[in-house]
Image 1 (cartoon, rainbow, N blue to C red):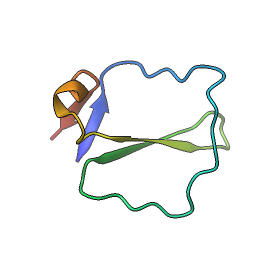
Image 2 (tube, helix red, strand yellow):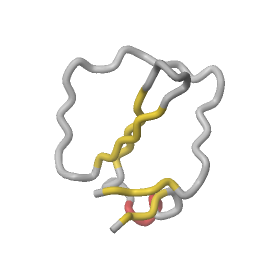
Image 3 (cartoon, rainbow, N blue to C red):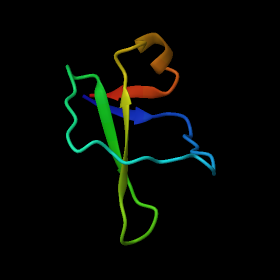
Image 4 (cartoon, rainbow, N blue to C red):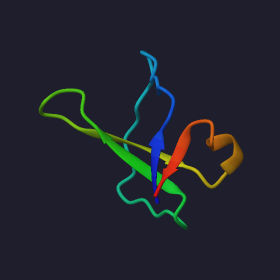
Length: 65
């Protein structure tokens, strides 16, 4: 499944990042991920679980065909 973000996503200054898990298992197909870069030589990712409340998530994401 591919989705496109339809609203700006803002991560406020002061947001605390913690060590990521070494291994992650995700049930089903409801988890989406985007890779982002803050500089030319770095990257990170953001994940979101969409299956929890599909109706509410339509405000944020549109499914791509």
